[in-house]
Length: 295
Image 1 (cartoon, one colour):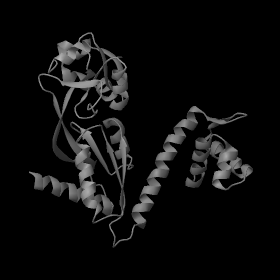
Image 2 (cartoon, one colour; image 1 turned 45 degrees about the vertical axis):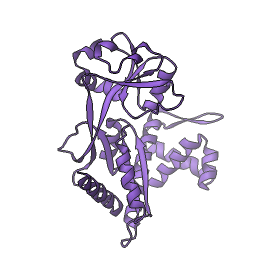
Image 3 (cartoon, one colour; image 1 turned 90 degrees about the vertical axis):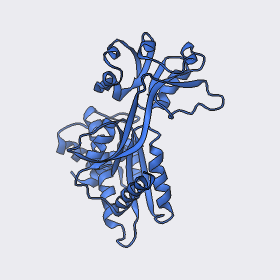
Image 4 (tube, rainbow, N blue to C red; image 1 turned 90 degrees about the horizontal axis):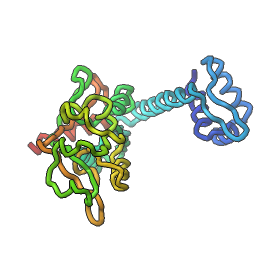
């Protein structure tokens, strides 16, 4: 299976048309069709359904699309690292992060580096810890910013000094908004919107205790911005961290922390025995120095 053919397949999946993909790739349509047929024969699986108007991927095709994109991205990342001029600190840094205001520290580090190393470029992706650590394991990320603990046998970590606070995002006209803090008992019977990571990993019970089993989990979110839209429309109350949703000006939303206070720490994580590019190495050095001087 050649990388070139995977790129052809990704182009067809993206364009949903062999003729449009052939034009984008500067290939003849028969040549591209033959390459795709050879790929299907090699794998022994049909990858696409050729309709009159568009191409749709089979289940096997959707899996290949996901894996092929990861392979192509990793190759491009590796090529960029290997071809970067040795005398210049330049290149790309890939960072995955959960939603947290602690990301501000990483952004400040990037800003401090910008003047001395203007040829460093940053690529940020958001998601829960499971998705981010998976991409880190695959080599698609240099660093991950995650909440809570990680497997120290697999990763090196740099604990960050900030701590985020758990609470409830709600409409300001909710009766609960009159309280300064909320208990787990206050949440009983309410339609709750929680992060996917909390709901599927057992973390919710760790956070709220055995009472969590009796809560009404109405919906889950991956990004709190989407969850906040549900709150804004009056569909429920979101369990989330502070400082993630702006509540200034005419916002109809407010945040109330839980009591007893529930906090969580952050860690910058990278794979053990990771071989960094010069750009990533400089970034880690800079953020480490920034933390040391702020102590």
